[in-house]
Amino acid sequence: MSVLDWIWEKADACLQLNKPFTMYATPGNNTVTAYFQRDANIHFAEDFTRSGFIFCSFDGNSRLLIPADASDVYSTAIVAESGVFEEILWPEPTEAKAPFESIVSKAVVEIQQGTFAKVVLSRRETVAISDGFQSNFTRMFAAYPNAFRYVWFHPETGMWMGATPERLIQIENRNFKTVALAGTQAFLGNESVQWAEKERAEQQFVTDFIIDGLQPHTADLKTSAPYTARAGNLWHIKTDIEGQLAPHAHLRDIVTVLHPTPAVCGYPKAEAMAFIAQHEGYDRKFYSGFLGTITPDSADLYVNLRCMELHEKTAHLYIGCGITKDSNPEKEFEETANKALTMKKILR
Ligand SMILES: C=C(O[C@@H]1C=C(C(=O)O)C=C[C@H]1O)C(=O)O
Image 1: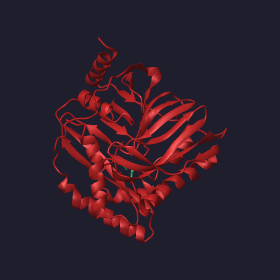
Image 2: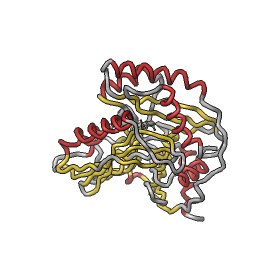
Image 3: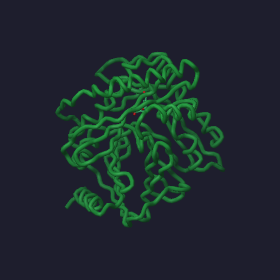
Image 4: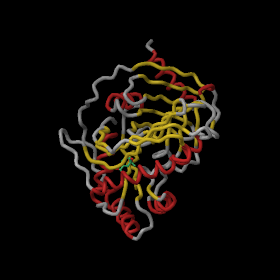
């Protein structure tokens, strides 16, 4: 039996016993690492000092941990099949269009009135599936080699799966790296990508917010110029931010500063959060939260985007986009539909 078959068997056994497990692969890497929790306890990442895999909700209140020292951990390379699949036609999300466009319009009015500068609005779309999580994970793994790909199961959360292009933060030997990412355009082929003022301004909000927040915790901080980067069938604008943590800096404080970033919440944070809570009309749960591995002196954390909650016969896809003063509700809806396609492409 191959290590991979063994991992799939262990995952099935965990599901049967209702015990937490996770499997993940970092961007550009074909090695899958799996954590199978041995006990059935619920562990939380309270002060970020215990090593393991963390899964945190958007509201920051639920920070679950699969501790490394309470788990069997395995790694193996997956030889990815082709990441190109036969296209299937999914029904158009027509019912979601009017309600989403209506909250975007409301947000634009608030922005024009000065309540906040940016808000990220999202929606949940439910699709019928027939394949199990193994096949869906395998396709997602092959289709998005440059994303952080994961499946997570926990009795507290159910099963989640995703392929996120966005890192929250990476820390090694007190050196950190993060990105400011916003702006979205569909990837069509060999187009030369042009960004409108609205998209550049939106990405600048994200960059400034991250720099301002990190400054007190860092000894040295550098940023790249903004550049265009592809993630699956989308283009984004990205800025790389890196540096060294100050001697007193603590991972928990840094995460508190960064999460939720304006890329998933908006700016200023409190006003944007209040608008989301009042108008989005559903619970984001772990979508736009963060996840990844932590040890006492390192962290590799990602923002939970392009993700879904998996049930036996349905998947709930979570998708959002940033709204600024020039947003066009119809275009923003289209953007969420494009993002949903990145997941629909691999789902069966
Ligand atoms: C909120 C999402 O994405 C975020 C919002 C983006 C935007 O506004 O263009 C782009 C990337 C992400 O930072 C999502 O994909 O659900």
